[in-house]
Image (cartoon, rainbow, N blue to C red; front, top):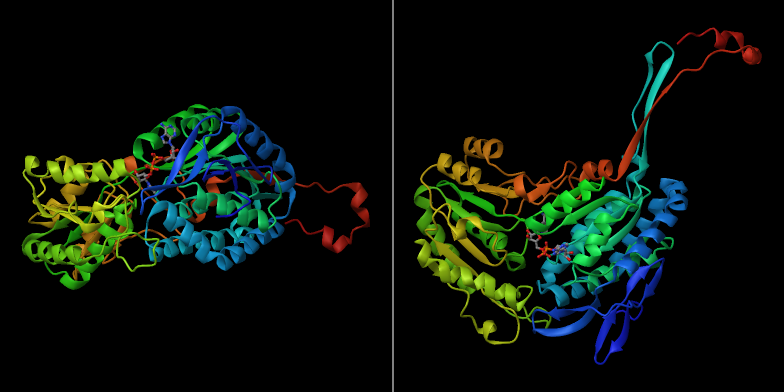
Length: 511
Ligand code: NAD
């Protein structure tokens, strides 16, 4: 762990610092959270839950840093991000290992998530082109019109536990490239990767106060949501908190983009390639231990493919090796985030029979579950009825519910009844079925023969329904719109006597 981001005030356990005005500061709080290694169940750090006064001071610092940062030409601002990208690439493995250690996903998954985050930095490095406005000469007689983009002010990012580096990277590179200053409040369950990112951005030369980190819980979040100097809030997390953040932030006159929870459907048509579909479903449902907002959590096989699909998936799931991810051993799946969350995921296997469903693969009784880590293995519940908790609730673990249907219309109906609307995929060889699905399934991100249809940095993350609150989504050019405000300028210049020295031929032009 980095020495610049920790102090050791508690015996045996490093305490994280927060980043204020370019300096790593020890919080004066008397409230702390514990960061665990989910693979071992052991505490690895203490995270301070910053006080409202500390958060207030950080926001004021970010506000003070605004004019100077916004005045730097965007071409120079993004040079800091080019350097940041270079440092991230040099320290890629260190960052991926930190993600694995505090979150539990496998190193392969952690590396992929860091790569997705670096791509957002690459997108943000294009800000000089992305910030260009529009113009039209002579929109009315002798009048020219043009638009410019300006930063909105102090922006805030509040992030979840499931992607400790990637989700913060969805936000701050774009915000600061646009000339804003930023306060990140990472999940108190995985704050170490955020500190590592802060350390790299400081090393890249970001001026003091432009990028800051506060640690904390509801106290810190509420201070940010109610702070008069905060202008924009990006949030990613569960639906209930996303709704709360959206309502509180907008009530206080801030622009808010708040991405919430999900229950993603995977439709398998009878003509699908079984091997390809089963392997995509495995990666989607059990990758990152099911703790992805784009994880497939309900398989909807149409017709005769249901039985062979469940049999194939059950075998694949049973053969997967679940275990600690930080020991260097090759494993296919790691733990979930906490003991309580493990118990919650497992509890859905307990309610299956009461809901008329049957457990095809039970992840509770795997060897890793006997240790101290927070393990539950790949699990499959078959014959799940639409409308039941297994079909409806976001479980956010390696548990795949199977809702068997007999037509694509019935599958579309399952989607229509879902309160969420993040991602959905279809597996088929039929262009007609794919087209029906693409246009009519009730979700904002669609995959065709793709298990996890998560858009990359250049495209917006377009969740629907209770999976997103706001207007402008995270990522892509919508993020440039979110982090800027426009000015439209109409100009007319009148010819005057003082300009008689100008070449008469040129002056006679009446464009
Ligand atoms: P969470 O909602 O518990 O926490 C998210 C953030 O909100 C954290 O920083 C936390 O400190 C803060 N928070 C928690 N309770 C709060 C409260 N009462 N008041 C104010 N702030 C509070 O989410 P999580 O468990 O960390 O993350 C998992 C969730 O995130 C899942 O629901 C998942 O689907 C969702 N998620 C969504 C997306 C997406 O793009 N839609 C991406 C990743 C994760």
